[in-house]
Image (cartoon, rainbow over all chains, first blue to last red; front, top):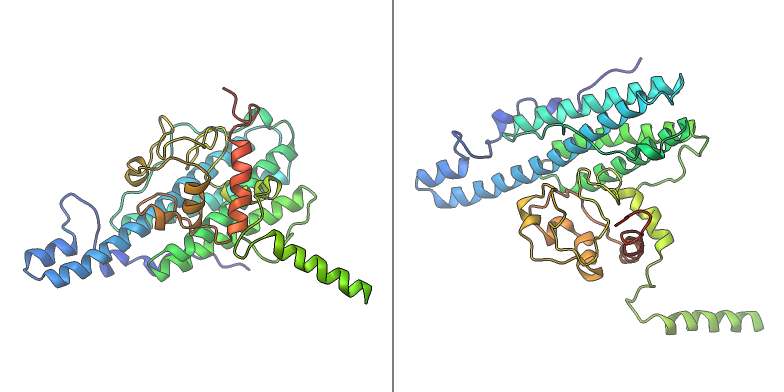
Amino acid sequence: MIARINPFSALQDLGRRRFLVGTGATLSAAAVALMAGRPALAAGQGSKDDNLETDVRILNTALGAELEAIAAYAVGAGSGLLQKPVLDLAVQFQGHHKEHAEVLAKTIRNLGGTPVEARERYQFPTDGLKTQNDVLGFAAGLERGAVSAYLGAVPLFRGRELASAAASILGDEAMHWAILRQALGQDPVPTAFMS
Amino acid sequence: MKHRSATAVLVLAAFVSLPAGAIAPGDPVRGEAIYARCQACHALGYDRTGPKHCGLFGRRAGGVPGFRYSPAMAQADVVWDANTLDRFLANPTGMMPGTAMGYAGIADRQERADLIAWLRQASASPIECPP
């Protein structure tokens, strides 16, 4: 049995452990420190706020890509080109991306940020999707790119918990990529390392 | 012995043809494979999480009409060419703090040269990027 986990569960109370960022009614901790006449503390807190903003920005980019992936799988599943059991795989992978998006959005809110929303319309190269393999190849390209995107994001997170959680999603994207390649009749794991 | 001498000449020739620290000219074939890393967010012909790459060379940073850039990118005083792309791809957030491209970068100079060589070709391709 595979246990379902939430990789961001360690961050559930992040809002309580970290200060909020952004504008509006919530004052940043740096502002509070400045108002209390403690500029040294404010300077240090300013750096923390910058870190938080950086993390929120990275998470929002990831969320935007996840939302696009959800839409892409919807196009693939609704194309009429996918046959079972490949169709079931596409729906399952779309479900994973929905879970990723949900937890990313929640984490962004916990950090005091505003999650990006799905676009009204996405553009996909649908003219080039004529067969099941075309759809699988398109999806495999997105998943392969997602692996690299998370791989490139992990070292940038200022919060180590976030890096760990993003790596958990990276693992899922890599499995998607491998299985899609297998379905295409390609070597599912062509290299020992990803970049 | 002859074989050993020939090998020595070849090794010497390799050093003579490439100065220390230099990299080979970018190979667009290898660059296309490297572009696979970008395809979570980018495409040549249409905007995604990141902007399209058609027309990249000579375009001002933040210059794709209708694309919602980060303020950092929108306000950057940068025109994309081989040099600026090399700097950005090496360390996107280092060159442009605040960019939405939350990606650590491509550390390998040769890989960057290959990717830029492919981008130069592909972003001007009349098939991928019709006028």
